[in-house]
Every structure is written in structure tokens, then in C-alpha cells.
Image 1 (cartoon, rainbow, N blue to C red):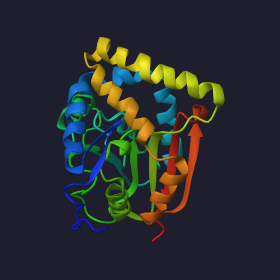
Image 2: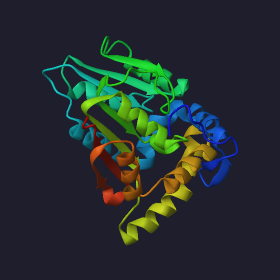
Image 3: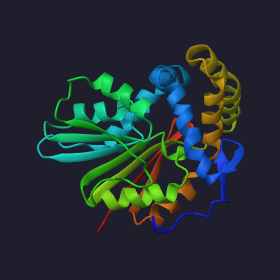
Length: 257
């Protein structure tokens, strides 16, 4: 589907477990992240017991930004710049990261955190993952961490990722997945639906946003189905690596030509 072809106005999608009009989802997702922006990184630590740091380090180890040549990296839905900072620390002085997010509140947090630390090596762009205002074949790598499940039209976002990558460029997506251990899956469900919204209420003053985030995880496609979507966007050598018993997975694909 081209970007000029829009879905019918009455088409529905999911917002957590709720069915909503496709055109309504983005505004509601924006409201969620506007609400949680200032406490987002703290809540990540509390919800994952710090594991999100390990998962992100695994992502960067797969990315392997070079230290001896220019490297242009696009991090989508990366508002608070957590992935960007790790990539800049791992890469050389010619590594540059564009942090792109549709939510300005999240980007403000990232820009405040960056300060002058990476002057000239990082920029922040407000834009939609489904229609990137960026030139084709302009990036060596595209990452998206815990963001793609919130995109209303995932196929559009994947097509845009393929478009902006250079031939030989890599797509990497860190996202919640399907727990594949029989006992862990029940513990994880109980923790997700009972503990996380309470943490959201106490720490961020917003239980409903965190309830949505938990529900959105359950609605995300299985690893096999998502791999098929990545391939359909034109990527090759598609694979996924489950981490922590399948709580999350890193999905990988390459733009061959």
C-alpha cells in the first residue's frame, strides 16, 4: 500500500483491548506518552527491575556502530534518547543519531537530557513513523525500541524504514514479545495486569496509561507474524532473538538493495 492510499475512515484498530477508529488511535497514543513523559525512564526501571538496560545494551551490541567511519543512525519513537545515547557512546566521533518521535513531550525530555553532551552528533525531529520527512537511502541503521506496537499502521512504518535505509542498512526493533516459559507466562501476566498499573498510579499518577501499555503488548503480533511483516516491507535475512524467556525480542532485517 502506498502512502497516498489511506485506509477507509471507518476502519478499526485496537487501542489496548479496546476497538477504536483507525484515525483515533494516534491521538490517544499521543495522550498516553504526553502523560508519562517525565516519569518514563524511571518507570522503565521500576517495571523491568532494570532489565530494560540489559535489553537495550543487547540492541546496541547488535547494532555495532563503527568507531572509525561516519555512521548515520535513525532512532524512531526514541523520544527520551535512551537508545541514542548508547549508540553515540558505542560509536566513534563520526556517529550521528537522529532521534525521531511523534510526541513533542518525549522529545523535550530527550533534548533536556542530552544538553550539550553530544553537540553536533544528535538531533531531534518531531514526525510520524508512518511518513518520515527524511530522504531515501540516507541512514546506515534504523532502530525502534518499545515503539512500533503503538504505531497505528505498522506496515507503513516498516515500509518507511526500508525507504530511508541505505542498501546494506540494518533494521533493528526491540519490542515486547510472547513469553515462552510455562510458569513465567503466568507470573508475567499477573505482574503486568496487577502491579504495573499500580506502579503507574503511585509513581506517574496515571494508572490508565500503563494499563494501555500492558494491553498493547498482548495485542502485538507474534514473532513469526511480525517477521513476515518485516519481510513484506522488503527486508531480507530477517530474524528475531528472544530475551529473558521471551518477555522481549530483538527483530532484525537488512536492506539488501
